Length: 340
Image (cartoon, rainbow, N blue to C red):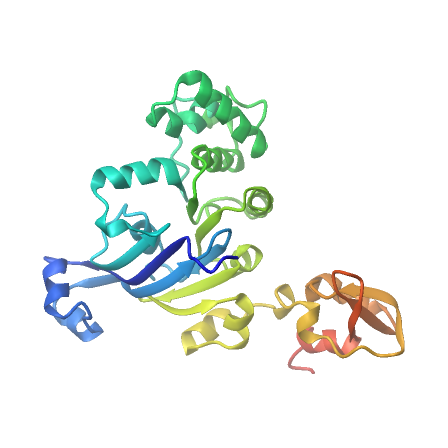
């Protein structure tokens, strides 16, 4: 990960009301919650600052109404922020003209939303190629690119199908393919899998991770599902009443919650789903047995093997060197914290 962010926002606000810009300026660009309430305004995004680095997946979480969808639309200026700064590849997006923003969205931003919004009268290939058509690319070239993306998302052979002839998961793959057709530099996804059945949702998460391993996109992903966030995120931002109340790796959020809200939000998350062996292992011991466990393995993935093993498992790094040990006791403390 480089030290220069691909996308940054600083003190970003979005207010709804009679004249939010005037109200915002009259309070020195820093209205309090009391000011907002007494003025009759609604604050959808409140003083949000964070960075997204190249190749990183940042997941934004929160309950319904917390402001996460408004935030992602502000980042692409589909919704105009009331105040703050948004920097994308070093350019201040709030200073960009309407024409410049349209060009940036067409060529550098990919967007996928909860509702697939496919064009029902167009085939799969024409849906995927649509952003390229908007760019003015000729039919042969845009179809060539569309076929590459259709193959990438596992829909080869369905190029001539219409959306009504596809399952929900297949329709969402078309939506993902369409957003990738322009080869975006940043990818915004707003609860893209929440309308899918649980099994299909899991399959789409697997597909998403497969695509990311190939494409290394910079991603802002919105969800309210912590299990989904754990699977996908490099870092997680938790929103509450328009503000980000904590931002960091999942281990930090669960083990060191910054507020009671974050503690309540994360308390039911099984630690074995995100804790690695390296976080809980003991020191290297002389009587390690024949069972070897990877330092980066998740506790949940190795728990059964360790519990069934009568000896002490040897923990090894990526080079095969012994770096620690793991016992039934280590695993039990994670799986059964109250009993431990």
